[in-house]
Length: 367
Image 1 (cartoon, rainbow, N blue to C red):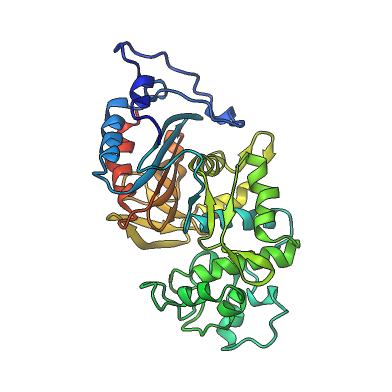
Image 2: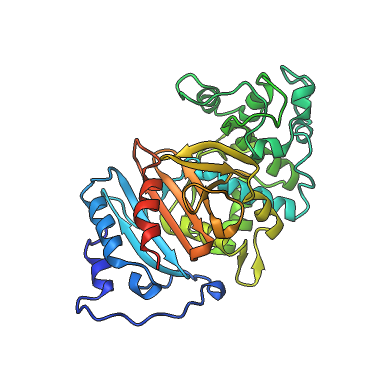
């Protein structure tokens, strides 16, 4: 567990103001390690953040495992709690879905996937005998999966007995399980959270690139931006990784993913994720399907969109927090207006509590 006084030490014990650092985030790319700064050096209110961190240390906000804040390319806060450590490879839960969006965008940019308006089942000729096949299922597109509007009769809440629990239990026929499931309505008409469809996107990546999605991720996303160890929950045909919630990474590497999105998919001299894909992914496709901690959200391509002011419209980068969210409190918040990335990992029952302290503690600390 990280020593508690570090943030205070960085902030300076003499009370003298620290010299500001170059605000060159747009041209900075972390190497093996992030560059670091005291919060005050990158115009963050250290006392306000100290107050939040002390509450996390005292477990007054229960079961948070890490809090990282990157501003202008500087890692200004890196704290671990409840026996968690910097090198822990932590479950991302459904943050994995947002990573899957990035991977599919890369496949689109490479020309492997030509059109997200194409029918899902057309990518799987190896399943000619699907159950419950009708015109609605034939019409379901990749875009419908990306926006959680598959039209399937599928509910994941509660998890016990849900289609997702049944799918996870199979460990071998994930794609067929999803493609066989019964329809309820026309695709594209209603938001219904569906992890099974996101797993199937991994099958699309395999069938179009010849690479299992975890290897595709390593070659085309993780290695180019310096992501370290990754562990996946796997099953299904070809050892398919669970694209809906099965990825495990270190918190510092979650910050790299957020930083990639903050920089428009660019890393050094390489466009890792196509800029037009990111623009589509981070544009509201579904309005107000849910709220987190009482704050309204919109939805893009497997990314949640929170309004920067906590109540208004999203879509404009200056007014939007690009958000990846996972059960038990896994979060990446990308805040373009402030040049900030926030990462939280946790094992909490109240998974959206970090949204509350983002709005009430972290955003007010930005100067």
